[in-house]
Image (tube, rainbow over all chains, first blue to last red; front, side):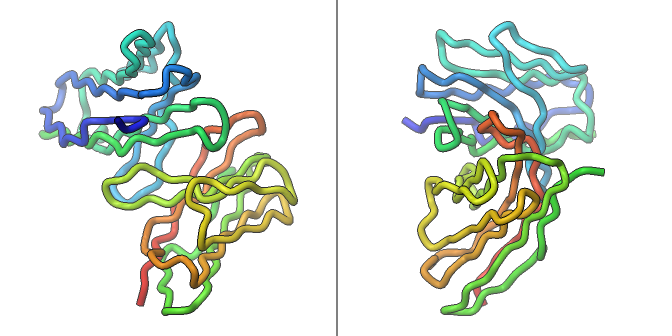
Length: 110
Length: 113
């Protein structure tokens, strides 16, 4: 089993739709979790951290389920500009234990 | 504005040649990283540095070398020993105490001639 797994997609959704991605991780000792956004042929950008209590930033909500070992990202009212690849990142304790997922591609359609 | 500058954007390497990728940051971050991104794979850590004059190997350090003589600069050399260097190389930084990169440069695409 991979340390961090994401559905590669693509997820094709119409503007205004709500879409959710999951990211599963295998190391139960993992401590910190993050979502990044990466536009085509660009660098990743930190989108948000994921806390046990869940956190929200505008249209974006991130949640952590430790029992089932996954994190999720929910995007409400999708915009064309949300089209990108979303990477999950899991920190299992230190520089050499940070794992990037391969990403989920989102395409928002007019 | 603070950020990370990588150069060049595109680089071509001949057989047997060493090439150096530049990375400069003005964020006053202590930690700097080099990652490699290949299609269909997650970012993989090549080297990281927590402070000046100190750096550590990541998961795929073979065929690469780095230096950290100044806080702002963390150049990566891709040596001829790296047999499959074609990839997107990303430099990143974070404040000390965080192992997860906070900012990335806009990357260098390296190809073999």
